[in-house]
Image (cartoon, rainbow, N blue to C red; front, side, top):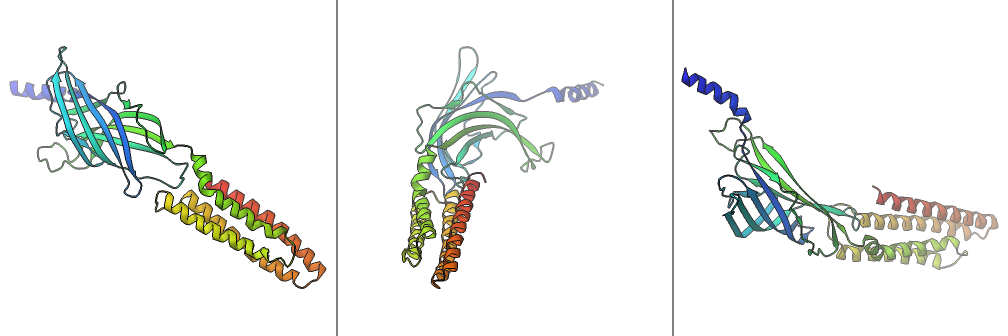
Length: 311
């Protein structure tokens, strides 16, 4: 009878038992080595936990889940006079991040540092220490501005018990802390105009033949020079801009400029042929065609550029 009462009591009280909660904070002291090809960044940060109850060993139990590699040469744990335990650890990590360069130089990024414990939520539950966490105000990231910081806690479910035959289910849950740092490019418009000024000047030069007199040699040489300048500028940009496998904003602008100049070639060659007949009606018609296509190409090129910014 006593055993039955004990089992019933245990079953009734089990749902109300919970794992120990550990406040966990992160303070980031360094962000550097942004690798756009390798899809990584490096971060230096402190972790700490100030908790009640018996001392818990975190050394070797914390798992930076989105890190390729990490090292820690500082770890300390001590009991304070008020009975609380205070743990702190310094970590240097290489973190994974999928850099999206499509809108360069108007791009932004949300760098994440994610920490789990090797013990499941039956033993350890993290609570984000939002009050004391943050990013050092002395961090300077070349070419970027830090705009925001957020830390939050969550529970991550895995569809496996990792081979633990004593587990009560086929799945498992682990507590996770995630620190997010939002960054954006510094002075993006200055960078943009430095990289595209040659393209837009080349386009303007390529439009001049639409307004030139007949039988002028420069009607074809100017678009040729414009096309050469755009192609050359594209190679310069590719050598200075971070590499990307996707079609970026600057790639699209250069491609649109080259297509526009090729279309100008087609129209100019056609109207030059009309003017070579020396018939006044055809010459007048060729000027009208030039002016119509000049306006059409200008509107289309401008619309395409605006559309690329909002895609």
